Length: 279
Image (cartoon, rainbow, N blue to C red; front, side, top):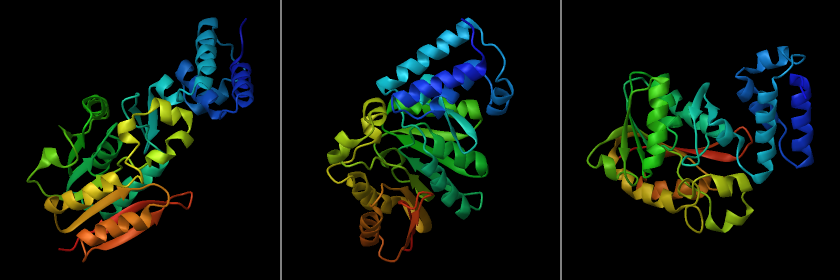
């Protein structure tokens, strides 16, 4: 039975609502199957869909109650105006991380050496390089599978990024950078059970959890980064809600002369720590 675009979207919204799921996922999937943008989708509300497209769309919508993120079905997520491929091997880029990128871009003069530690999909590193083409960007991740995704994104988007595999700063031993940026794992193990199913079951543990209090990686960064900065370097970190003061203290102990700022995100939650290094 044929359906119009409007009927298909209305069915999806009703189905998702009845399962307590976010209705916009239906639109994202419909745009994916119709290979169109939002404006064209709205303009085609009264057009008939082919039966093949309707059945494929319906099947995908009906998988969403299992908890699978819609981004994994589509295979991509938008970040800073660009489309990044994603998979179960990388964290899905979030809007809050765009604010971390924006905070770094405010400070760039165009020729800095930047390293992104724990790059995942490469969203941060690739965006910084494309937005400030004169920069020299290195991206590090412990996961080979994550680096494969990041490298493919860099190739697709035309970014020049050096990729290194290894644990935190180990792959760039002996190197110094003007900017060190990281969105490390910061969820406490004790919060595992309370996470949304689509995060807990479908996104990589390596990118989510960091010890009992969520600060394990920040502790390591606070001590390891001393060898990779110079006077005037910027360290920019994404943090979990409520971690601002704890992370600030960790870095103040290692960099007592540094000016450290805690920034809040669009939801008025502490989300970014900026450390202006003074040696």
